[in-house]
Figure 1 (cartoon, helix red, strand yellow):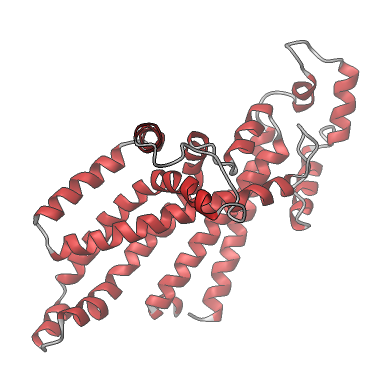
Figure 2 (cartoon, one colour):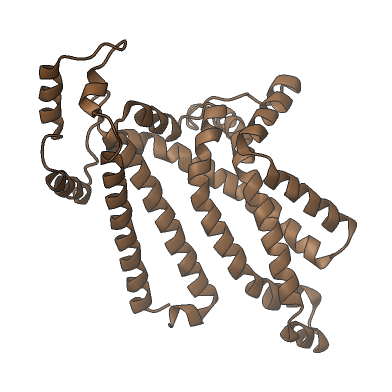
Length: 318
């Protein structure tokens, strides 16, 4: 991995982040409706025009769009995401409070997916056509077909309502009660990670079968190398690249999938303020959360590319 390659990838990620910020800014300003009028409307009664004009001036909505865009970019460079139009609360503070909870849920679901999907895919490839291979392939097809919110509801009905061995939902800080925190995290992590586990199983199985069919594997076996060494050194190393690619892409999509999971299990992540902000046309809050999710997606992709370069030096040398 060369410094030039890494600098180029970081520059591309920054340009993409700027494009996303621009698109989000323009899209929200093209949505019909006056935010000031909406905020002042109560019970379907139209607000006083003078009050609407005063609020528009306070929010800077009277300025030309280009001026608003320049102020928006300048705020981003300062790390200022603005203030919520609904409760007059800093957007950055709200994101900083809730983002760790969403990330915890994503990484817990990803960890469960890795420790179940990857080993299962390896075992299925090593025993192709066997009972486990056929059963696991059928189960993964079912997991991919069932929506996340359905899985979450079924988990609550089974483990919380019927068996009564897990809490139905909620949140408790880890420092306050570690065991209860992990119990509350388990079911939503399973719900959000089930699809990724199925994808990792399929990709790992396919990549393993492709690697096992290569000539260098047959040569290594002909030389008398131990099966375990052949598997780890010659098969897994070459099969990991596509698996890591899929893992990185789906970790990004999990950021969007957490919305329904957090709602079903009452997990206080980014979904609640995002949905509330969209409904109330709270532009700064929507922009701040969407940009945060987009930057995280770009960061995950950059990390995946760096892992590729570490596994295959030819990538970083290009």
